[in-house]
Length: 137
Image (cartoon, rainbow, N blue to C red; front, side, top):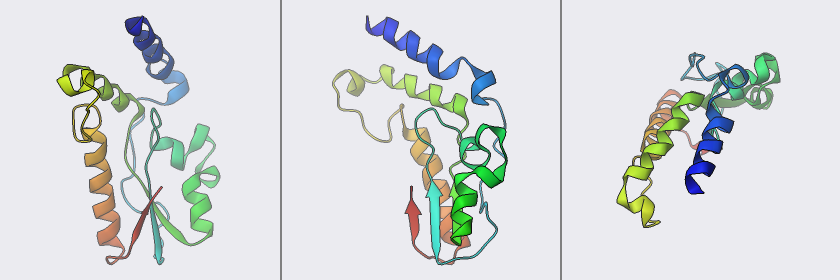
């Protein structure tokens, strides 16, 4: 039953690249708004989302994105550069004993890759904005 549920989720979330823009390259890692402000946000894509969803949602253009909306309030924004297909890496967690004991660690096989990308993006945002505070959202 668990195996069937896992297969269903994989099909649902990852095997429809036409709908999900899974293989589109992530074009940016830096400041999306090219502005300097006192408030800096780093947007963390949610499970199965891509960075693309936050700066060109549904291919409707940057003007309809969260990053653009934040720029209207003079908020400098960065998006962690995640491709949708990268979420498949979460599956590797099943090879850790901690997964089966319900004791997974944040930097384990399942999400370590994600947290490393978050760390790189936060460091970039911090450096480019003169050491000001960075808000994770």
